[in-house]
Amino acid sequence: MPDATGLELLAKELGDAALETVYYRSRATVLVDPAQIRAVLAKLRGQGYAFLASVHGVDHYPEEPRLGVVYELLDMSRVDRVAVKLRVPTDAPRVESVTADWPTANHQEREIFDMFGVVFEGHPDLRRILMPEDYEGHPQRRDFPIGGEPVIFTRDEAKWLEARE
Amino acid sequence: MIPAPTDTETPPPALSEYRRREQSIDIAPVGEQLVGSDQNKTTEELLTLNFGPHHPATHGVLRLLVTLQGEVVRDLKPIVGYVHTGIEKTAEDKAYWKVIPIVERMDYLSYYFNAMAYIGAVEALLEVEVPTRAQYLRVIHLELNRIASHLIWLGTSALDLGATSIFLYCLRERELILDLFEMSSGARMHTRYFQVGGVIEDIPAGFARKLREFLKVMPERAGEYGAILNANEIVLQRLRGTCPLDAQTLLGLGVTGPLLRAAGNPWDLRKAAPYSSYEDFEFKIPVGTVGDNYDRFAVRLAEIYESVKIVEQALDGLPEGPHITTDRKVALPPRHELATSMEALIHHFKLVTEGFRVPPGEMYYPIESPRGELGCYVRSDGSSKPARVHMRDPSFVNLQALAPMCRGNYIADMIATTAMLDPILGGIDR
Image (cartoon, rainbow over all chains, first blue to last red; front, side, top):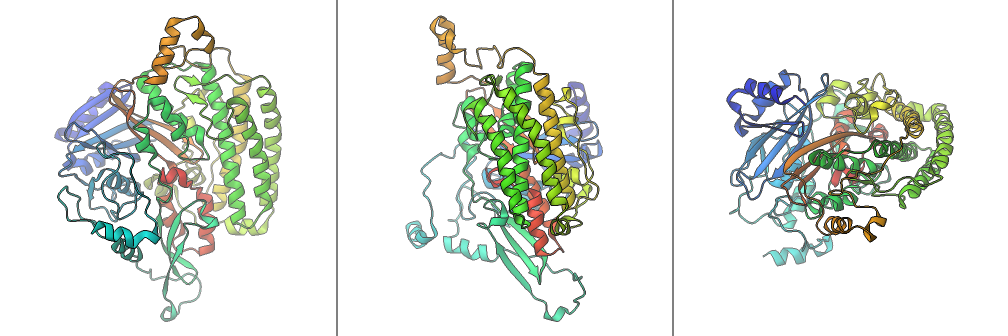
């Protein structure tokens, strides 16, 4: 992790794309403008953070904007990590996909789309990945209830179709 | 692309629509070049083969949609989610210490690692000091778990390659490890041994002796596995030079662990960013040269020896001291204190009913699991339950490398490559 000063310097490099920096428990996070995420990650790659370790989805319910996407960047030569975070509201959960620059984001963006409903524009194959394709709702959202999930067997398909109509 | 979900959306497509779409998943365009000498393109046609989800060679409920041109794999799409059990969602409904047993069930072959990643993130948020003895005990169990995980991988992979006896030998040694786990924690799998602040109990009398016996036996046995497989012409032909992928592509795909090391990149978090006292131990990082299936096999086999070395050093250097933090706000008080101390009783009651509260914040804690970087992202909102637990599971990320590895190779090599990829579906689907 860069130290607190290093994080400020990094945020300065990003210019107006960086909205806020959080340095907490030796973890460095930059909150960025969702519209500029690809440019931000490309700039950080130029700074040496060339490995995208992970992409997480997070729901800040009830705070707005609710949905968050966290990109964990890693510099393998300096063994340095920095997290880039963006927040989008639930009524317009659109973020540009970074899969073209970082192929590893493919599965992880699909997972976030599946679980939180964040739409990654420009993703080559944005389908649900863990839940069934005809599933309704985004189960990892904090206001999505636990339980009461019926088990859908193929043999009951006709019955389910009827019940839906 | 699927249209954006909005709250006032038209009703979603009916189930038959789902079936229709499932059958119409797109296939990749055919490349110009054909493998082998057969250049008669007019007689070639593409075949979409559904492979799995219930197939002995997929190592779990993994489904692959394979586009074949003759025997050559032209494209491959992994379809996952069949064992999705919503562990991350369940975790948000439980107190921090009650989450440990359920995250252990994600990647079911490396349960200690799942627990370690999660606990590490919580400990970082709490700023708890973990006693050195607890760190060493963790290392012993982590490395034993790594050996057990590699043994299952070796056994099942050998089965895929047609070698049946190796599987039985591997399970025989794994049994010794599970016996050790049972000794220290009472459970053979999903042991719930790691706790926030340390481990639940110190190792019992006789554990060290039994562990030393195992450490003596294991390298010999690993040597035997190597001798059997390295002298087997069929295994060598199926592994050597098949489905290589270079380190640069692997890094772009986010692949870490033995797969990346097989391609020659010695990235290992135990060395690069040591956690839990790994800096105290001397061990080597096995690396491959070309990154083919044989290198993947050889790197994992060599890792077994290195893990044995680490466990030996941790056992020799095991310091005296407490096995869990003395911070009563996060760790249960010893049983005998409950009879005499009012504070202990109060702490016990608070911990068991509500659990401890974690200061608000976010943390990502990466460790080196048998399959690569296993990271746990924990967001706390200040309550006694996590607001978000997300595992960056290496199997989930590494699975993306299967298609680039297999494209243009024979379907038989795809079986070997899937085995050498070592995907654990419990970790992928969570």
